[in-house]
Length: 150
Image: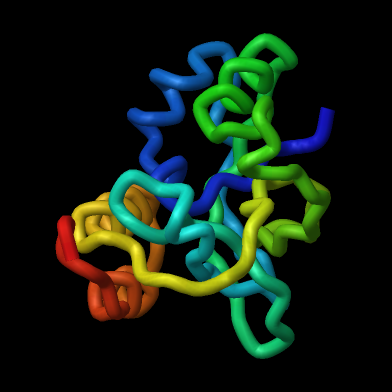
């Protein structure tokens, strides 16, 4: 089975160990030609949800996991892929050693809207914990967001 490319809060290794206990960490890399964005503001509890969009001038830091079938079913439930909230797509990830094929989730909704400050903070912390470069984490922390209830 291809590797899973985790972005957003799934970059947190502890979260992934909890959600996918049988699936080992396989490294980190970059999705070149993609950008982290947000969409489906009306679908989330606190605002827009993380997703990816193709963008030739951008890249997204990802964690790679060798996901077992059992853990993929569990992760699909966590991510709402079992309800079509998120769809899966195949992507090419550039690692220090080579390019690898992986799959990841993309939101099944229109791009736009702001994530909550709390959610954006979780994503930034997850990226930092996973070893993302400081400039990438800083860019996440400085993105526009909304306060809960606004």
